[in-house]
Length: 191
Image (cartoon, rainbow, N blue to C red; front, side, top):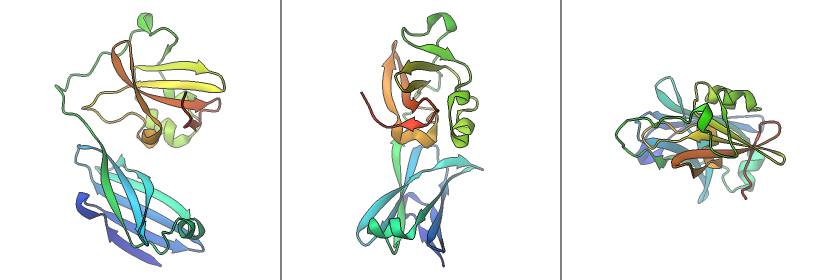
């Protein structure tokens, strides 16, 4: 079974394919540069976060597969539609990037990491980290924190982990800080 839905006022479409107890979702919407968008499923009065859109081929796209059983448990089967919502707006600034910390000026307790992707345990995260600069790493019991320079007028670093980030000021500069276990997998718990 295949169904298509419009993603509400924010625009875009959602394609749903059911096969053998699993449902594959593909969502896309135009890239407007306004910020990060999330896709939600709707059904029987319920709403469920499908995920965060990622830039791909000039569009924002999202793919995810769920079981019919999981959708039923959440009150979303049958799926009746979906929405796309602006979850985080990029602030329009002066367009001038902040200067990354130098090796000599890494904040106390942190070290500069020139290739943060090598620390991550998931292929998608490694790809998302390609080209990131100005990363800081702080070792913790059971893992590490990764801090990536954040600028309101630039794309969010490590977009797939948007929900796990906390914005933190370190030495007068804003960073998106992510927590990982020793294998480089994201952890959600906070201090």
